[in-house]
Every structure is written in C-alpha cells, then in structure tokens.
Figure (cartoon, rainbow, N blue to C red):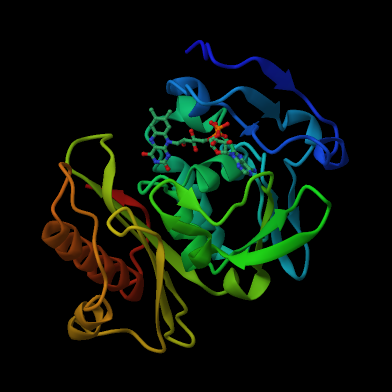
Length: 276
Ligand SMILES: Cc1cc2nc3c(=O)[nH]c(=O)nc-3n(C[C@H](O)[C@H](O)[C@H](O)COP(=O)(O)OP(=O)(O)OC[C@H]3O[C@@H](n4cnc5c(N)ncnc54)[C@H](O)[C@@H]3O)c2cc1C
C-alpha cells in the first residue's frame, strides 16, 4: 500500500545517528504490517535494515535473537540438540497465517506490533524470555516478555525506544518440552486463543504462555502437573477479550481446553503444534 502521508525515509547505520532526531518517527522492520495498513499519522519511516540486528547467537548462557531477525531464519537455524524448547519458536513461525509474511517479517516486528494473535508473544512468555530495549541516548534496559505488552497493540515502549534483542537463558531451553496450540474460528483465521505449554519431564514443572484470548500475554506456572481444577482456578481473576471473533466466556473455556490438551500431550509424550 502506498503510504501517502510518509514524507521522509531514513536508513541509519547505528542508533547514535538517531539520538538527536525528534521522536515522531516510526521504526520500519520487515514492513509487512506498516505497508499493509493505512497509516495516516506516519510521516517518517526509519528503516532498521542497516542496523545489522538480525543475529541468532547461541552461547552456554543461552540464546540471543536480534530484533530484525527474519522469522523464517529460526526454522533453518541449528540450535543445540538439547535445547528442545526452541521448537516453540519454530512453531511460532509455522503457526503464522502465511509463509509469505514469515519470509519478510521480523521477530521484533511481531513482538512490537503486539497483536493479540501474536504467535511469538506467548512462546516468549512460556520460555521466560527477556527483551533488551535501547533508548535513543544509548542506555538500555531489560523487561520480562510477560511485562512488555500492556494491551492489544500497546507496549511499554516509549517514543524513540526500540527492541534490540530477545534473550532466553539456556536453563529455559534445556530439558523443557513444548507444545503449541492455537485456536481460530476459521482456517487461517485470527487466533482467539493461543497456549504454549512448556513441561520439564524431570522436575514435572509446567509453564503456560497464554495469548490470543487475554488482553496481554500471561505466564501461568505450576510446580507440578496441574489438575483441571488448578487450571480453572488460575484464571479466576483474569479478564478475557470479548469481540466479534469470540466472547470472553468462550475464550476462557477454549484457553483452559488448550492448556489441558497441551499438558496431556506432553506428559503422554505426544508433542507438536496443533491448529484447530
Ligand atoms: C494480513 C496480516 C495478518 C497477520 N496475522 C498474524 C497472525 O495471525 N499472527 C501473528 O503473530 N502475526 C500476524 N501478522 C503479523 C506479522 O506476522 C508480522 O509479525 C508483522 O506484520 C510485523 O512484522 P514486520 O517485521 O514486518 O514489522 P513492521 O511492519 O515493519 O512493523 C510493525 C510495527 O512494529 C514496530 N517495530 C518493528 N520492529 C520494532 C523494533 N525492533 N522496536 C520497536 N518497534 C518496532 C513498527 O514501528 C510497527 O509499528 C499479520 C500481518 C499481516 C499483514
């Protein structure tokens, strides 16, 4: 789509170049969302391609994914064999609506767009990722994935701030098995509930990253495999989205069903992504 309001296009090679600019610009990552919607208020696009932030790095400490990493690159990457939980990241790519998007869209773009249907957000929450945020003056800080999004299409990012990378500790990837479940009311439709379950067979700990049905992604943890009653109790105070795609009561119910199915499959040794 031609963005008629855009008057300026900038391509910085480092963040230092943007430090003195006024803060009314929009970051441009893969452009799959920006160029797909009318953006009447966007006047300046700052293209992130030249920043060279597309790395996937593995160390003994864990995984680091640069914000401009193309989503599909995660599918081709050879992660350490004992990091089974990286399967959740690959499922986040596979469960996106179309391969045409995931060949151009970035990991950071998905997270910062903060759609309720984001497939990456609940995966990052289940893996207890942290996000590295850079301020224009060069300072940086970290925030837990579960605290980054505050509502659909709203995040904690302040004007000029940028997501630089995603970090996942090795301890959250080693020994954990994952199961990705996504529910939409029609094939390839917008998700009304997403549950990424992480299960550690040795310790029997369970973590759920819940998205799609709730205003912002939520982490639900259990020290041992939860009962159906414990799963229901975990959402007693939780509000759910309520719109033309699904009522709050329906989303609550489906979320709990997906949690139950995820943990049942993992404890039975049947793992994999499922779309309904
Ligand atoms: C028709 C359509 C349907 C989609 N359906 C789904 C879906 O069902 N599930 C799903 O998960 N995704 C969905 N997406 C989102 C898609 O997968 C991409 O993740 C998304 O379009 C953003 O990726 P991008 O890199 O192209 O970002 P862009 O379009 O370039 O940017 C998106 C937004 O994020 C900001 N941004 C980007 N990177 C950063 C950064 N590092 N720091 C700060 N701000 C940043 C931009 O300023 C912009 O506001 C859909 C997209 C489209 C166009």
